Image (tube, rainbow, N blue to C red):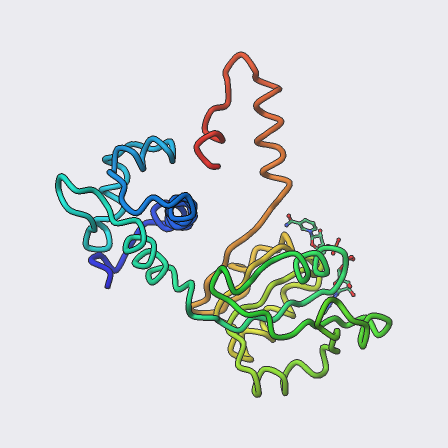
Amino acid sequence: MSKNDKVSKSVIRRLPRYYRFLGELLKEGKSKISSRELAERMNVTASQIRQDLNCFGGFGQQGYGYNAAELRDEIGEILGVNRNYPAVLIGAGNLGRALCVHLDYEKYGCRLCGVFDNNEQLVGTRIGSFEVQPMTGLESFCSANKPVIAILCIPKSAAPEVCEKLAGLGIRAFWNFSHYDISLVNIPDINVENVHLGDSLMALCYGINNSEKKYSEGSEEQ
Ligand code: NAI
């Protein structure tokens, strides 16, 4: 499917936005869109869109634009949104509970299949449709359910050991909220997406702190 094996991270980061915007267009009943129109809506340049999509062989026809449903499907295929990758969530505290209940994982390509914590008081309690399981049960759970994604909602100090354990149990990707730098653990061929909500907030504060300079980048990232 991909023309280039090495697609830059910034292109990959834009793909979910294309996917989301195209979904919104379809909901509005628009089936066709030009790269100029798509660019205007997404606040990027038309040439940026063409360059991004060319990384995957290019879509659309000169003079016709893009078929929104086809393009969305192609991007969804590239992202793997229909793959339903099984995921486990580690750390059923405040953040873990919120992520467990408020996110529609299947919409984004995964399926949450288990929630784990090492706090005995939490083990056996329910979060939505999940019962919190003990870390001692992780190994047998992973061999039965084969999760490939781990959502890390544990303290930074606990992360190195937990990451190594999870990698040994077949986890190939970490959605990492723990503030730990997973590259410090020697795990080959692992995918990591670090999330720092605080960074986003600080970038916002930069905007008011430097109001004369107008922080405009954020307006692109709707
Ligand atoms: P919390 O204390 O409510 O939950 C942490 C949970 O992890 C607890 O239930 C605890 O029992 C469990 N845990 C600790 N060690 C473990 C281990 N070895 N194995 C399994 N479970 C273990 O904390 P909260 O508020 O849910 O935050 C979790 C982590 O996420 C914290 O480190 C916090 O700094 C970080 N965080 C990161 C954010 C981000 O944007 N990246 C935003 C909010 C919190």
